[in-house]
Image (cartoon, rainbow, N blue to C red; front, side, top):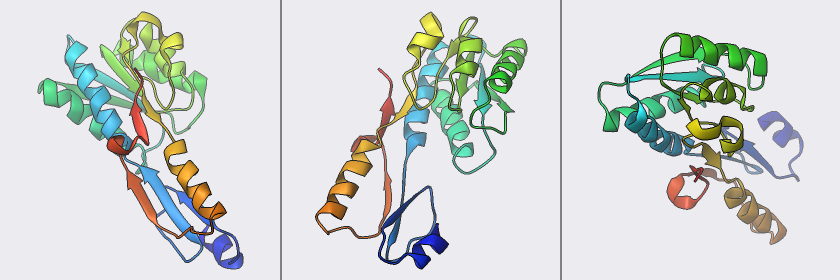
Length: 188
């Protein structure tokens, strides 16, 4: 995106999860790990076997802190908790997500989190164990064993940013807000 921004100096760009800025390109991300920490606390309160599972997408900086936050949140209320991780290496692959969730259930985890764009892992797990979703309200898919989901509220960033462009007041920045700003929360 930095190259494209350089080639188009009269256009504004915003790079989600980027690490560079320039005069016509900002970057933004939210501290979703804060909501994942809170979801982990919920998991730590309901686990009976102290064994959590996490179906992760990729081993990248957007996913690894989610695993860590979920585990640290659980350990903040139950220091005996351990977390087993299965990766799908995909943002959207429902069969692989279900397979990973079932493997974790077979390994006796009793609460599971997921980090993909479909509810497949949550749906596979929630029939037998507690589960948390990802990026959307997933209670309808999970049923009675649904705990919560960390959720993005991108309108908290996009609305003011688009207004700044419209008002000719846009400046490149490095937006990095958390739960207190409203950019992310837990499903209620």
